[in-house]
Length: 186
Image (cartoon, rainbow, N blue to C red; front, side, top):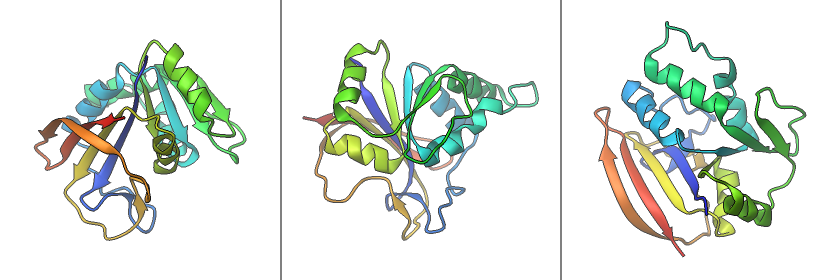
């Protein structure tokens, strides 16, 4: 069975966005691009909330030419080749290939997708991921903790949810970001 992985850039105090909805504080150097490229390479399907999809759709038309570092070009190619499901009640149409809209999050449908998929899946967007966590669907959490305290904003993990985690690994990047890789204990 495929795994469902939640991965997010977070502040030290657990936010993915500041109070103004910005995430420009996350570190995006070549080392971080290389991490994300290798992380996404084996993924078969991305599950997105509307807002994260609208951010990530940039990669559909981003230059993959020689003016970009190889890790950025590689990431763009991987993103374009991967299936995408956007969960939104308001998005009228998608603007990327290999993408479809689902109006409702259906845990049973995601379970069937995990059972039938030949590759792992990622889920992005804290509200969507929170629904998957509440339904017991998340198998792994990958938190990239950035060296900043925001003091408020959009939380990466939902309130009123208890999950037991097993640390599988950690890695410190030169920029100060720390990757924490957890398995969800069921």
